[in-house]
Length: 446
Ligand code: FAD
Image (cartoon, rainbow, N blue to C red):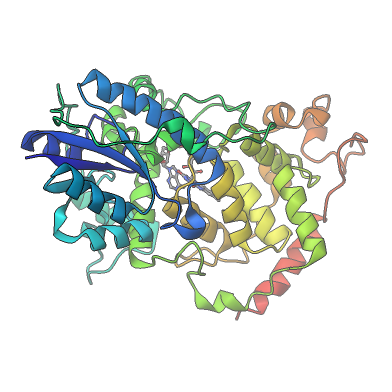
């Protein structure tokens, strides 16, 4: 029996249960559909499109090594799949389940013709539930609940060969999709190798010594940098789990955040656009010309806070930002500049190669304190203290060349030490003033 294999953020051959099931049934037609309408505002962002281009190219070549190929189509996923079922005579569609609201809608519309498989989580989010049957809303409780489902199932090997159909349906040319950006100043510095082979290489070489402390130090490469590979499903979380050791609990807990965030969007599909707590709808965010100028300064890394500027420039130049600095830059936008977290979510969505609907929204709302978890809006990170505490001097020197010549004492706060070079901007707002303004705004919510 011929079947379609519908690939989305699961661009791999190893530990691909949908592929394994399809290949057992007979000829397989692997399909990737670029559907820019269904996700609405969450159509694949600029940096991700760059990644996707190369990921698709490498997957097609891996499929060809297995006697198969990847059929590319552009359009509404449900219509394209329905048309392909008719034109190829395929009797079913195999796919890995996804939790973005637009994918859940498409999955529901395809009905019985679609066979869904679990494979992009440590445990299927709908199975990890509270005692009363709901999704967990607090990560620590989720982690405890997840224990019942661990260890995850062992990863499946890639099939040796993938049976091909007698006739291949027509497909688009990847180059015609124009996924690579045309902005001349962008992605030139993207030092990434998308694709499953690189993800496999990275997990084989996973070095997590000292991860508990080093993961917080932006000047070091102390984390796995697997996030874009995980987002595009070039490696499964189960494979990453088994590549780490049982004593590397902190790392495994970070990995489990992905599962948690999909549980949140399963319960609250609009989480990327709606405050988790309605009371925050009353928060008086700044709007207008001055806040637009501040937003631009934040986006381009010209706030006068070196750790914030270093992070925003790393993001623009590499499509990725260190986790600690993501928290600092997000907190700065929300609390210091009093700009709606959704503006930050949008910018990250476009700039991150790992931009992920659930991970991005849950983390933004966590930092904002607008979310369903217990974090408070009044908890305001001090960027200068964070920069010193996590020893960000070399990180700042790397991403803010204007400050390259400053000593460790001056680099975190050039304004205060009188060492600010002329070509580096003064602070947009002082820390104390910003804190008071944010706390006053927070009081309006009660
Ligand atoms: P490692 O420390 O090596 O962790 C291993 C894996 O665990 C990561 O690759 C990632 O898949 C997962 N993980 C780790 N921390 C988190 C977390 N807090 N939430 C969810 N998953 C996590 N991560 C994304 O993948 N996509 C996003 O769009 C995204 N947006 C974020 C926005 C903000 C404001 C913040 C504070 C964090 C965001 N993160 C996001 C989480 C985190 O910053 C990245 O997953 C991490 O920096 C990726 O680097 P790594 O692969 O080296 O992580």
